[in-house]
Length: 257
Image (cartoon, rainbow, N blue to C red; front, side, top):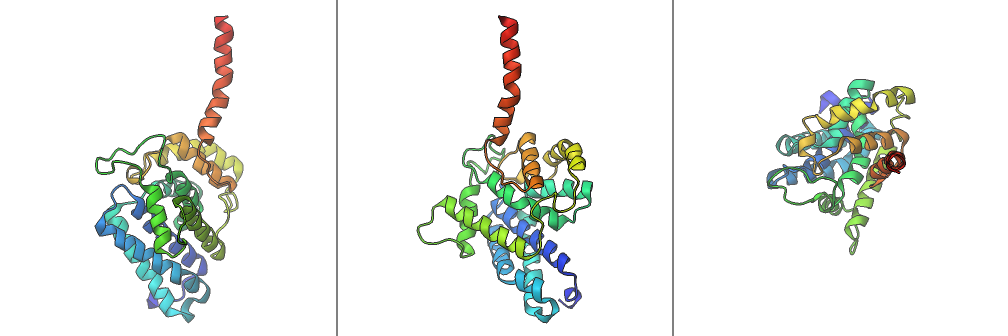
C-alpha cells in the first residue's frame, strides 16, 4: 500500500474507475460463473465504499487507499476468469488513437455500454452455447441490489437507472469529463477516425465476451453518443439507416415507373 500513497488524484480516479469497469463487465460477461461473480460484486462494493475517500484524502486515509487497490486486484481476478466486453474493446482503440488514459476511456464509455447491453431483445444474440438468452438487464439489476442502490419494489429498469445514476455521480465526483469531446479530442479528428475505431473495436479480443453481440454500426453509435455527451438510445442506429435508405428506395421506384 505504501507504493501508492502519493499517487496523483487523476491516476486514482482513472485507475479506480477502470477497476469498476473490470468488475461490471466481468459480472455481465457471457463467461461469468459462480467463481467470478462473488469477486466482481465484492470489488464493486469495496470501490463504492472507498474510492471517493481514496481520491479526496489520499495518503491521509491509508485504509481507503489500500481497500481500493485490494478491490482492483479482486476485480482483476474476476475478469481474468470471466473476461470483459465492448467497453474495453472501444476504450483500447480510443486510447490508442487519441492518447486518452485507459481508465478515463472506460469511464467515458461505461454508462452508454450499460444502456446498450441492457436489452432483452438485442439486434443479434451473442454466439456462446452456455449463454442461452440475454441476461444483462437482470445482471445489472443484481449489481444495483448488491450495492444497496435499489429500493423494495423497484422494477429492473428502475434498478438499472439507479446504477447509472451512481456511476454518473461518482464520475462527476472524481472529475471525469462528461464526454470524449470534453476530454480534449477535436471533433474533426474524431469523426475522421470513428469508422476505423468502430471496426477495430469489433475485432478486439474483448468483444466476444460481451453479453450482446454488437454490430459495427452500433459500436459507432455508442462512440458518437459518448463523444457528444449523449445517452445511447436504442433504435437510433436503425432510424438513421432508414433515413439513408429512403432516398435510395424512392430512386428505384422512379426508375421502375
